[in-house]
Image (cartoon, rainbow over all chains, first blue to last red; front, side):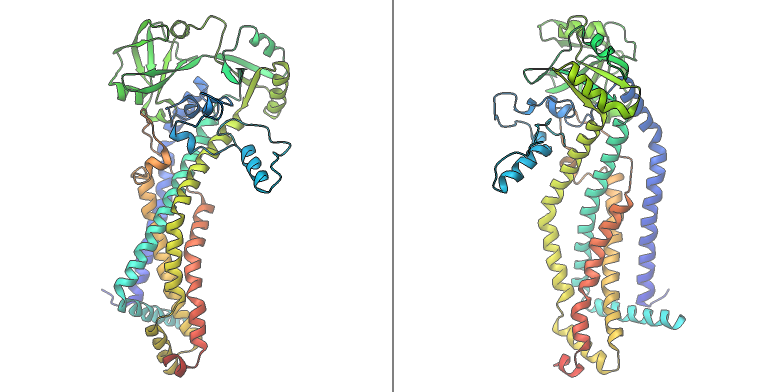
Length: 122
Length: 377
C-alpha cells in the first residue's frame, strides 16, 4: 500500500469523481426507469384535463393556484389576512412587486401596465 | 512533463503533510465546507427536479381553460356559453368540465370531486386517488358515504384506485359519473364548472383567448403557458425562501473560509520564510498553497454534491421535505425523477470551489515575495 500523501489524496479525489459520475449515470437510469410512470401520469392529466399539482390541498386557491380567482386568498373581507401557510409562501404577483418598487422609489404610483393578476401568477 | 508531474506530486505531499499538522482544524473546515455544499446542492437539485416534473406533467393540461366570473369570483358556466364559444374561429374542441371541492370532516381533508370524461363510470361508483384511499383506508370494492351540501347522504362504491405513481396529480381526486356529480352538488343540467378548449393552431392561442374575453366579457381565459409559469414561479419562490433562510449560514461560512484562507497564521508565515530561505521559489510556494485550496474545496464540493444527490433522490430530501414540498392532510407520496441541470452544477462549483481557491492566493503571494528574513521575524 502506498504511503505518499499525494497518492492517497489523488485516489480519494478519483473515488469522489467516480461517485460524482455515478450520480449522473444513476440520474439517467432513474429517468429511464420512471419514464413509464411519468407517461402514465401525463395520460391522466391529458385524459382528465387536470391543471394543477396536488401538493397543497388545504384551500381552493392552494389546491389549484393556476385556477384561483382574483380575490380567493382574501375572500372573507377586503384586506383580510390570509389564513393558510401555503399562501404566505406563494410569491406575490409581478404587478404587485412593480407597484411596491414604484412606491419605494417615491412616486407611489402603480405602473400603467400594473393590472392585478391572479394570486400566485407571475 | 514527467518532471513537472513529479514536482506537483511533491508539492501535494508537502501541502498535505502541512495540513496534517493541523489535522482537526482542517478536517473541521472540510466538514463544514462539505455540509454547506450539501445543503445548497440539496435545495437546488430538489427544486430543479420538482420544476421539471411539474413542467413535464402540466404540458399535457388543457391548452385553454375558460372560467366565468361573477362579482370577482369563479362561477358556474351557464347554458348557451358553449354555443357562443363554438362561433369563435380557431376553437377546435370544447369540453365542459365539472369539478368541485368537498371537505371531509372525518379526516379534515379536502377532496377534489371531478367528472371523468374517460373513465366511463356507472352511477354510484367512484374512482379515488391513492392518498385518499390511504387516509380513509379504502380499497376497490369498499363503500363510502358523503353528506352533500344539501344534507343528503350519498353512498358510492369504490371501483378503482388511481395509480400510485400518479399521486402528484391525483392524490385527492374522487372521480364520479356526471349524474352523480350534478345530484351531489345540485348543479342543474347544462351548467359546467369551466370549459376546456383546444385551439387548432397553437400559435393562435393568445388571439383566441383575446377573442373569447371580448365575446364573453364575464369570462376569464387561462392559458396553459400561464399555468406552467405559475408553477415555475411558486417553486422558484420556495427555493428562494430556503436559500434566503440559509443566507446567514452561507455568510458565516464565507467569513470562516475567508479568514482561514486569506489570513496567514504566524506558524504559516514562519513556514514560508523557512521554505524561501532553503531555496523554494515564489512560484513553488504559491503552487503549494494553490494545491491546498484546490484539494480542500474540490473534495468538499464532490462530497457535498454526492451526499446531496443521495439525500434528494434516494431519501426523498427528508431533511428539507416539509419546507420544500409544503404540507397538507392529503399529501401525495411521490419520488422525484432526477434532472440535473449542468448550468446549476457549474454555478454551484464556481461559487464554492473558486472563491476559496482564489482567496488563498493573495496573502500567500504577499508573504512569498517578502524577504525570508522579514517573514520569519
